[in-house]
Length: 256
Length: 291
Ligand SMILES: Nc1ncnc2c1ncn2[C@@H]1O[C@H](COP(=O)(O)OP(=O)(O)OP(=O)(O)O)[C@@H](O)[C@H]1O
Ligand SMILES: [Mg+2]
Image 1 (cartoon, rainbow over the protein chains, first blue to last red):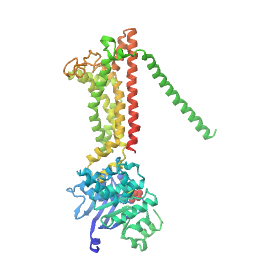
Image 2: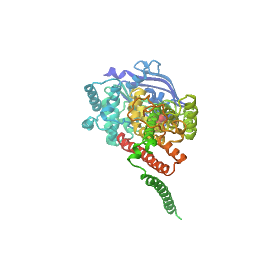
Image 3: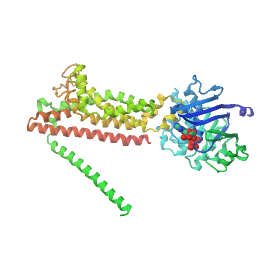
Image 4: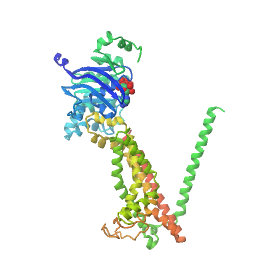
C-alpha cells in the first residue's frame, strides 16, 4: 500500500495554454499520485477547468487552443502524435459539472462505451452495468428501472449515472469538474462518499469551489490563481499551514 | 399614465392584432375550402384531366415529384448540415461563407430557379420537360431550406452532449450517429415535412422543367421505361400547383373555374396535413427524447 502511494499516475511540466492570443495557464507543474484524490481550487476563471481538460485532450475539441508542456501518463506522452486519443479518453474519464446523460435508457447509457467498442454479449454488458452502477452508488436506486430514460432521473442521480458511464469504460484516472455544484447537500454527500470509495482503485482529480469538500475528501490540494499554480501540498498542510500568503487569503475569503 | 396601465394597453393592442391576423387567415382558408368543396367528388379525384376533368394524374405527379425531390435532397442536406454544424469550425471564414451562400440560395425567387433549370437541365442536358428535370430543379429550391432546418435541429443539441460522448473515448462518428442524430431527429423530421409542404405547393420552379402537360397515365404499367408508366421519370408531369396556374391562364370557362377551385382545396388540404404531421413530430417525439 505504501509503495502504491509513491507512484505518480500523471506528471505535467511547464504547462502553458493559450486561447487564441490569451494565455490561460502559465508554466504549471503538477504530479498526481496514484490512487489519491487531488482537488484543484481557486477563484473563477483561474484556469482549473482548462488544466483538467488538458489531461484528456479535451482542449483539442475547442479548435482555437494551443497547449504546450509535458504530460506523462503511465510513462507515455499524452500529446504524442502516436497516442490513440479515443483510448486515452476512455482511460482518463471526465465527469462534467452539468450531468449530460444521453437520451436513452439508463442501461444503454452505462453500457454505451462498451457497446461502441464492440462488446455484444448481453450477460457481460449486464454485469458491467451492474458493477459500474454499484461503484457509483446508484444501483439500489435504479436497479428496478434500468430501461427508464436516464433523462427522467433527478440531477444527483443523473450525475452518478454519468459517473457510472465513465467507470464502465474502464478508466484509470477520473477527472471531475465541479461534480456536485448542481446538487443538493444529500446528493453531494452521496457523491463524496462514492469518490472516497473509488480512490482505492482509481486516481481522481477534482475541481471544486467548495472548501469543506476539498478538506473532507482530498489528499492533496492545488491552488490556482490567474492561470498560475500558487501552491500544491497535502490537504492538511494547505488548510492548516498554507505556505503562501495568497493561499491563506483565499482560504480566509479575502478574495475570490 | 402609469407603466402598468401602458403595459395593459400594449398587451391589448398586440392581442388584437394577432387575433386580426388569425381571423383573416382562417377566413381566407375557409373561403377557399368552401368555394371549392362542391367541385370535389370521387370522379374528380380518380379521372385524368383529359378524360374527365379530374386531377388523378396531377395528384400522383405532385406526390411522386415530392418523393423524388426529398430522396435527392435529403442526403445532401443532411451531409451539408452535419458538416457545417459538427465538423467545420463555426468561427471559420468557410463556415460563414457557406452560411451566407445558403441564405442567398434560400431567398432566390423560384421562377429564377425554374428558368435556370430550363436552361441547364431541359436544354443543355437534354432532359426535356420531365419529372427528373423537375425533381432536380426542386432540389435546388429545396436544398437551402432543408439544410438550414436540419442545421438548426443539430445546433439545438447541447455541445456538452458531443463533449461527453468524446470524453468517454467514443469516436466522433459514433457520437454523432448514435447520440446527436437521434436527439435531433424530431426537429429533422419536422423540417423535412415543412419543406415537403413548400415543395408540394411550388409552381414557378416546375412550369419550365416538369412541364405543363399531364399525359394520361396507365396505373397498371409499372415498367419505369414505358412513357405511359407513372414511374417513368422522363415523361412530362404537370403537378397540382401547375395545374391551377394552367387552368387559369388557359381559361376554359365555367369548368375551368370549378376545376381550379377544387384543385386548390386538395392542395391546401395536403399542405395542412403536412403541417399537422410536422407539429406531431415536434411535440410528441420531442417529449420522447425528453430534453
Ligand atoms: N473555450 C474558451 N475560449 C476562450 N477562452 C476561454 C475558454 N475557456 C476558458 N477560457 C478562458 O480561460 C480562463 C480560464 O478559464 P477556466 O474555465 O479554465 O476557469 P475555471 O478556473 O474553470 O473557472 P470556473 O471556476 O468559473 O469554472 C478564463 O479567463 C476564461 O475566460
Ligand atoms: Mg471551470
